[in-house]
Length: 129
Image 1: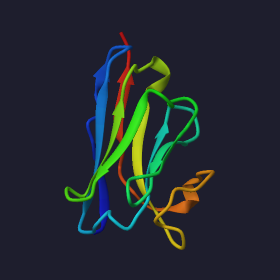
Image 2: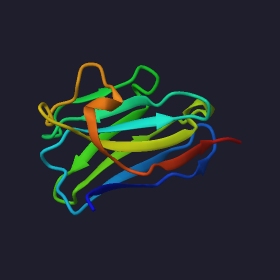
Image 3: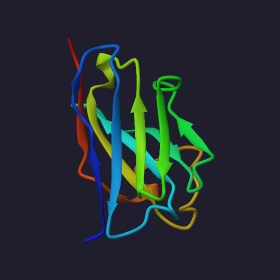
């Protein structure tokens, strides 16, 4: 089964850092724009960041801009989300997703869940003292 697998979630104190990883199983990530979404309890899933297939262009939500950095290593078939200066409001389950056709290689200007065809199961990030 073609799938994405997230890892790296943990309990961290405010101001701390984490790096999440998104690895692909049985397919290559290289052709796809890859996004990170998150969903907090009782809230809708929101787009956090996206990186184009070439790794040159990336987008960030206003809430994480300047604190999170997305990157990809196509040789390792993995996308990363480096999170710094974490805040309690960053607490959520984080999901990675691969964009579907026709524009599967670039990040959309406005991300919606429907634009992404493959999803991981999520990894939990909890920011608390």
